[in-house]
Amino acid sequence: MKAAVYETHGDPNEVVEVKEVGQPSELKPDEMLVKVASAAVNPLDWKIIVGAIKVPSKHKIPGLDYSGTVVSVGSDVKDYKEGDSVFGCSRGTFAEYVVVSSKACAKKPEGLSHHEAAALPLAGLTAMQGLLTHGQRRGVTGGKIAIFGGSGGVGSLAIQIAKRVLNAEHVYATGSATEQILGHGADTVINYKTTNVGDALKGKNLDVVFDCVGGADAWQAARQGLKPGGIFVTIVGDSQESFGNVVSTMIKGYWRRLLGKTGLGQKYVFFLVDPLMEGNMAQLAEWVAEKAVHPVVEEKVYSLTTASVRALFEASMSHRSKGKRVLDVDDHRKC
Image (cartoon, rainbow, N blue to C red; front, side, top):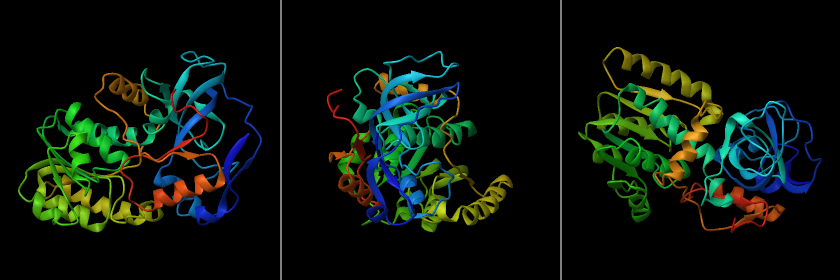
């Protein structure tokens, strides 16, 4: 099968190439073999390639999101069968075939193309867990929410969830693509290029700030807008290259959480998404079917060639995405 492969860590534009590799054949009882139609890029993908994040791997194929068709199922898989269209999270999705866990996927909603579905899993689960698992559990529903990074893959979905699922009273979002962010459902857009975010949020009495951007300034800006006992949820932390500095981020987060527990400050949560959290993928699919949530996808199309995959990583590393960037492994744009 064809797959994007990197044999050593380094710049994706230099180390990633598409070539023939062995097709996976062995399945554990709860696994499935899926023919990949589309896969989406995440910052985590290129951070692994450059070596900022160390992860073990039998073969170094990037990609964490996919949408495709079930080819075969393990002995314990009961909810899926050959021919089902599914989407979800797995390792090594920049390939024609991938082995996936039946616990980290869901059936693709009707009316959603593979191209669109591939943009949902990791970003959608991150937005869901950021707001519901780490926000709503503290009593936040129908309140005031701010999203830092409203035009990105996670931020655009977080706005939709905040407005259409949590019924937030008011959603603030940062970003420079004002019309696009308003289209996601935000009530107020703060253009960080022309406005100081902290000043814009000061006194807004926010219940939650969900940070998808990172940087030390994010926490300081959020504190000006959060009400006493409000919660700051971040997937990045102080460093915009956060995953390369997880220890420092967690140490700072520990002291901030401790301060929040004393009642002297706002609550602070740094988290990593859990793709196996029970029921999350099914819930995401249900929201899509109900038209409460829809993926935001960049218009440019990428294919499974060395030049195109490298261009995909270059675009992702630019930090200028207006939605998710998707790799079409198969010619299925009308699926």
